[in-house]
Amino acid sequence: MGDSSLHVLKGIELQIDEGELVAIMGSSGSGKSTLLNILGMLDTADEGEYRLDKVLIKDLTETIAAKYRNLFLGFVFQSFNLINYKNALENVALPLYYQGLARKIRQQKALEYLDKVGLKEWATHLPSELSGGQKQRVAIARAMASQPKVLLADEPTGALDSKTSNEVMGLIQQINREGKTILVVTHELDIAHMCKRIITLKDGIIVEDQKVDQILVDTHVQ
Amino acid sequence: MFNRDRWQEIFQTIRKNKLRTLLSGFTVALGIFIFIVLFGFGNGLKNSFKQFFLDDATNTLWVYPGLTSKPYRGFKANRRIEFENNDLEDIRNNFEFFLEDITPRISRRSIVKYKGESDNYSTRAVAPAHQYMEKTIMMKGRFIHQDDLSNKTKIVVIGRLVAEDLFKDEDPIGKYIEVGSIAFKVVGVFQDQSGDREERLIYMPYTTRQLLEKNNDKIDYFIVSFRPEMGYTSTLAFERQLRLFLKNKKDIDPRDNNGIRIRNVADQIRQNQQFASVLQIIVAFVGIGTLIAGIIGISNIMVFVVKERTKELGVRKALGATPKNVIAMVLQESIFITTLSGVFGMICGIFLLRNIGDRLAQFFIIDPYIESVTAMIATVLLIIFGAIAGYIPAKRAASIKPIVALRDE
Image 1: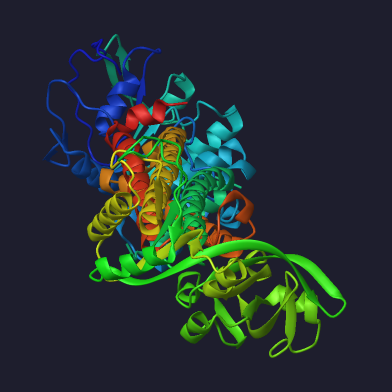
Image 2 (image 1 turned 180 degrees about the vertical axis):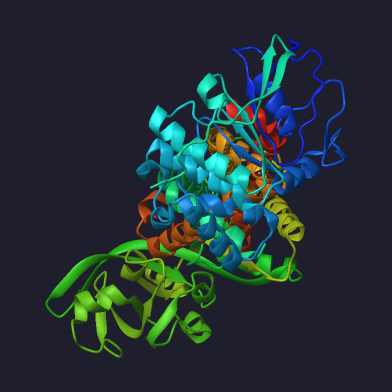
């Protein structure tokens, strides 16, 4: 915001293939969130090219950007960003509403995804009645509901304790196993090691890019 | 507009944000309510001005004699002017073109007796035309006739309250009462719209009164009615010519403003109506002020609402809401609330006006009302401006990048 500009990213060359589960690491200020926001079309890059599924993402109008976000991307935020006056089911159904689906189908699909994250019984609860881990699972269900190509998670476990962090990461791994491409921004090494590839950023450039052996979490979610 | 899903969204936001909805609705309802009530009061003022003249014919000139203030044709100043019977004749003959009718008036107070009852009443000695000019309504019997004038008959027409006081339940027609110790036959009972004072009067032929007063031909003053179809300017011309004629006849300096006084009822009504219109413009101005205050109120609330929802709107945008979606949602909600509360305020205002009637008569507000068209226009205006007030912040919110909106805490 404002007039003062700051170059956060200083040349990133990166290719992510379908089905990958990538962790983007770095200390705060390294540019990892900015990278994720550009990938998520929430922010725009001053220079360079970004292709998502062979589509060049450049100079999009807000309307087209909104359409792409809706069709291609699912977001998971550190602070969940659920709409506080909508219950779990309605939150999950929201992206489907913007896809223009009929109400019945929306409800049905939303319930299906809530079931996937193990919260079917909590469908009519407001976010304020859910624990942090449950909120994040609702947020993941919401991100998944529109069946995006890519799931972008910005510090998805940042506000959670280690037990619920593991649960959430287990869910992410499970979704990845079903073939979804997922990017996770984190600054926690153990979270990063639950992914298949770790990209480390420092001062706006990639300093390390390595495939790792994924540490699997017990995927049992209650 | 008739998208069921969007309405559901709106109802949900309204339900979940009751206070906010209530506040903005209240502002709008109050704005329109005050406007309607004030505007109605303006009309009520006009009504009460109209009513001041309801009991008299409005196409009349009241001509009074006065004291001269300038010497003229050998007469000194400070001379008392008097009217006589031949003045009536002269006016009749000279102003045929303008004149409809003419009546003199001689007012006296007299002790009036009937059997054991007696009281002091005002009597008015007049001609038949007086009935029309004062809009006297006959309840029983008749008014004074032309024959009564020529025969100088001793008859009276008494007011409703005089009849009640003197005769109680008796029928007064045909009975004789004493007016100043002379017996008069009661031939009629009248009522008058302008109330008690007028209904305590007694009318008699002016020739009879003159006969009783040493058979003179003096008149206190007279009332002239002109043809109702005459325009306002002809009325003024008539007034001017009549004044000149009388001044010439009575040897009054044409520049002397005091010898003859003429009260032009039509002119007075016109001036009063103008005064009432000015009052109404002032009142309407205040009303428009409240409308504007209402609009500013909605604008503030809308800015606040959008600010409060920035993050939510950011989330919605991240989930695929287009700027159009966002604007439509905010706008439709605001229009819905303004319409509902605007119509509510309007109905309350109209309802209040309907129920006031003459309860505020002591403040000169009688039967206040507002034309439904005016009420509608004011309400629609408020809704339109409310929509514009909502559009500006909504558009801004829709155009900020979702990431900025999401960062907003």
